[in-house]
Picture 1: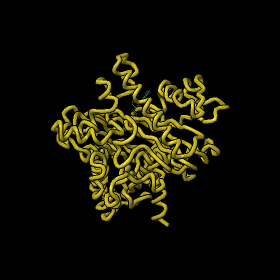
Picture 2: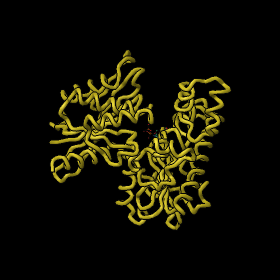
Picture 3: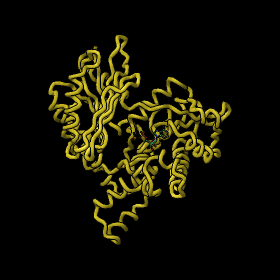
Picture 4: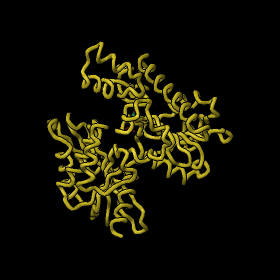
Length: 397
Ligand code: ADP
């Protein structure tokens, strides 16, 4: 049976999934997993669609192993353990930046790779790892079609006003503009919402993707009209270790008055800030909710307040609000955070059904709530597999 693989290669982890192509053209999940702690002591875990563990490995002395080495090991393992004879016919990749040029998924070739390489300065912490995975697969299996799916693509529908910074226009023309990210997650949610609640999908909806990385997307009729992330995935909401929106004067102060180098500031804002920086305890919401420390509570308060504030801003971009969708690790699983956000949004017409919310129902607002609130699990890997299959179909035609 034929299958397509999805790869989401980040700085310290690689998420992967294998989807079987069923006779009716649908994709069914065969296996999924994660390589984590790359650069420290890598671990690999994969499970089949029924949740059973199919591989668990670790490399305690593997700090020197890079993405290519680990993907190589994963490939060797996969070829020795074919899942019920499944043959991988293509690999789809999450690629963070498609710049102004790529609004659709693309088949990877040398020209595309060099165009994507040129975008690395715009996403230095993500793009090189995405491209490293593509290079690694090309070396391991040269003939295998690879498809690049862009996190920025979903937001290319934004109006011009939502794409511009108030800086000299020559810089905008050079690509310094608001792009937006998490696009594969938002696209998946838009499709699921259209299936679950077509009337709401046609309206004005804010999707809250709340994971380690976090952002909001304002959609009208399932198209992005505004989002909280901008030029990089550092902007907008407070995140696990990223600061989110920050007065740019702080960056100048850190460099000119406090003598920090650009690399130190980058590390501070991307890896030492957010929930970790404010709490001084952890970047992980589960640890913070269990902590009981005042600093953990302050970090959670700030996380909630910032989200509520940005929902207000995006509601203005939309000219009103019909629904809010929660997704990703925190959005899908943390009922208390959802409740705290929604209580701050009652003025907008949000009436949460606390019992439905605590029970992790799909619809968590009261039936009479002017703003519907839903929880929809995201699935970026499936979205990548879907695009991969669609591009393969175009090539074969
Ligand atoms: P990413 O894909 O950006 O690495 P995730 O979407 O997995 O992140 O979200 C990670 C966040 O979600 C962490 O803060 C974690 O504590 C939280 N989270 C994940 N699962 C749960 C759960 N079952 N209950 C509460 N919080 C959870």
